[in-house]
Image (cartoon, rainbow, N blue to C red):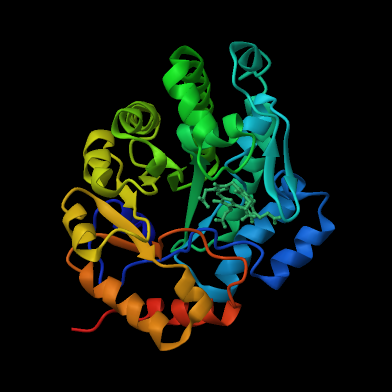
Length: 344
Ligand code: CP3
């Protein structure tokens, strides 16, 4: 049996029609998501209720026929499982009681992670059972640095000063936090794979805020460890790294970590992306703002990216997550174009 197109592309095959999925494809832009979300007792409750989380995972595929589902969960279930207080405030995004000292880390524990995240694994199994053999299921986790950003800043941040200050000023505390996150991430992704995930993505959404020495220490080195440990247990499962904002360091990240595929943000020029295809599969990188715009501009940009990347392995995706204000019809138009193979 041949693998689904998504998995073949992630492993380096150049296909006539690049398979596609959209980052954050499940969520508030879909009315059927908002309906289920309003019944749930908060966002984390939705993540930890397998029947609902599986339903939300499948909603975009029913409408648009993407080549992959991405597990519905969040990168912040790891700090929640470690025992940090995490809540999602409507309209304000995530809020956490910030950690910044050895004593704060003493209050966290890896012991309860497996039990706490068991419902997410049940979601994985349910979704896998509902997909066709041609549709792939992608699992994910936040990369340690990006999760540490939220843990140390206590939520989203514009400048990331607290986490960068901790990294420079208290390297022992920062490295201990990173070590816990590496262990939790390997265990969690490994369990997702065992439960049925056929590829995994590491979201390093804030990699681009770091100067080179910290990029090496907090993005590249932890990813090397995670990739090596996952490969030892699951040698055939493709790993997608998304070091958003890595710019000129993208090639180094891909070469040093050995990821199977590189998620590209909106700022990567298509010529640079084509060069990166010599190292591994590239995934990206449509501007999500074009899904707000729709019409001929959307179609022209889809075609420009597919043309520019047709010479090597490509998974079509956005350069960042879909906006909650996206009209569902625009996603339908994009999906229709993407289901059509390239000509000539
Ligand atoms: O469809 C999918 O892509 C799967 C589900 C998914 C969610 N979050 C659901 C979600 C995935 C893959 C994520 C990843 C995630 N979460 C990232 C990395 C990707 C990126 O965007 O950079 C980050 C940084 C987070 C942390 C997070 N979760 C933030 C900052 C927020 C608030 C901002 C927002 O968009 O609301 C969330 C909440 C969240 N995660 C929602 C969803 C559907 C909205 C919550 C709601 O319904 O109220």
